[in-house]
Length: 223
Image (tube, rainbow, N blue to C red; front, side, top):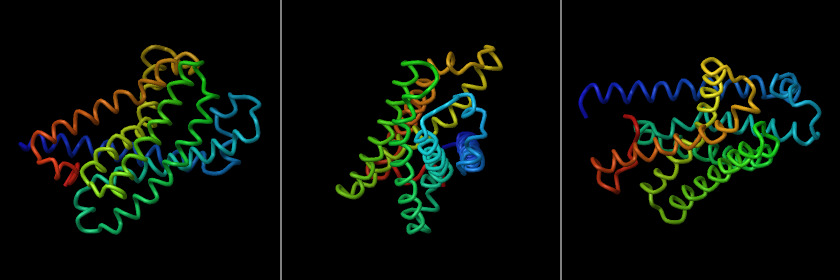
């Protein structure tokens, strides 16, 4: 890879890490306590909700925030090579967080703004989040296939990054299109937040597969 290509990759990965940490910290800071959660504009605009909804929203925000904040570390090759125990420890925490986030996301999807288009979109996101987690764990635990594990985990983290995409698209819809009502914007954003992410993940892996032997495809996104 030439110097400009490597610099672009480093900058892109750095931006990803920044947004992941920032949004993960936001979720933990503002949604990390049941009391603080009830004060957020998103929650107050919902009006009266079932008591269980607040608890599930809290569990989803905390688990998804943790997964987003730590998931990018799994793609740092140097970390995996020099501290494999840390890679495994982060993986255990990440997997548990995704399991909780995916299951709670399925419940919350049916209370989403944006009508049935958004509810179905967020439901599919949660199902794929859980499915890609299952396939990644099956690949490494049952099949001992590190390359396949890495590919499925790349898809999984691309879905985790829907938390980033959603906020970017929601902001753009409000600033550029003047659509601040999520009952309108989520009709499309519920799908736009994760489908392009999967396509980008597929593109990245296809580019790497053209340069790196199959068994070594997942040695790292960044050195």
